Image 1 (tube, rainbow, N blue to C red):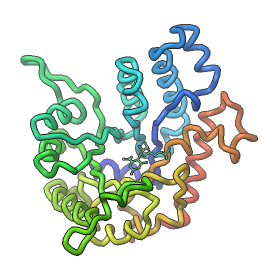
Image 2: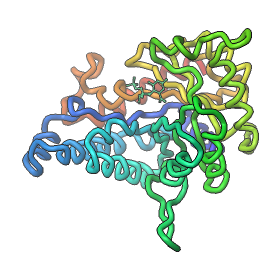
Image 3: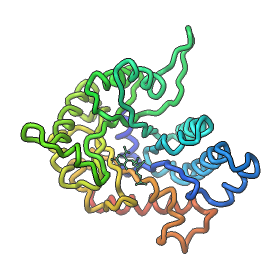
Image 4: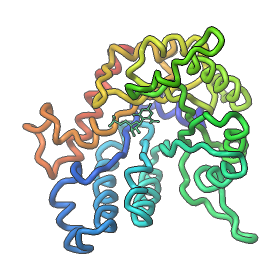
Length: 307
Ligand SMILES: O=C(O)c1cc(=O)[nH]c(=O)n1[C@@H]1O[C@H](COP(=O)(O)O)[C@@H](O)[C@H]1O
């Protein structure tokens, strides 16, 4: 998987990931109203509105970025229709050639992890038939339960050419409460980083990077620099640019000298760009996809300053 990601990053000269984290207040009024008329003010209407909104965003950005990252919580909260919108969003993005990072942050004992792995990055069996259900290329996982909880996914990565991004140092303000604890002279997140690096050794691709990557928040540049040296060939998924305050200048230490090693996510900053002051005067609400495109191009330019 990692080689496919790197190939796309290089072809587009862009390490940006667009986070598809829709909320009703980001969806333009016309799309909301249309779906309320069809389905009432129901979870189904919200889910249908999300799908229509996402398709517009994807049309606006698919030729500029290597991947999108739908966050499953935004969809799941609306029940089965929401989940269907998640699945349909993935299907549409894949048709447009985008790689999919399913932000599902799962964690459970091995027998349960197998079910998650089958559903998201493998195949589910019904008697002699088997089906791909969600079809993400890579997913996010929480490592708190240890390697036996991760192993089922690693097997699927090998079988189905998929990848993982495992939480190492998260972007939120309380991340240090547990992740920065001292564990025998090092921080817990450093220990986890070493483990993720080790777990990735069996999935190293042609370019020397592993399909098992790490989530390292953009809001911790100092810690990221340390992690970069502990795990030089682990790809970082870096959320926190834009809406959470991180800037391009903070991100230099996340990349390797080859200009690879990190993909930077922005969700609200792109999909709701038409509501941002910088774009409001140039784009009307119905031009939300053009505003998202402009925000991606601006982010690309911003990141090129440090690459
Ligand atoms: O795994 C993630 O993607 C993630 C990890 C982390 O440490 N911090 C973090 O913000 N995220 C996700 O990244 C996205 C950030 O969204 P914005 O702040 O709107 O760009 C959300 O989908 C979060 O769930």
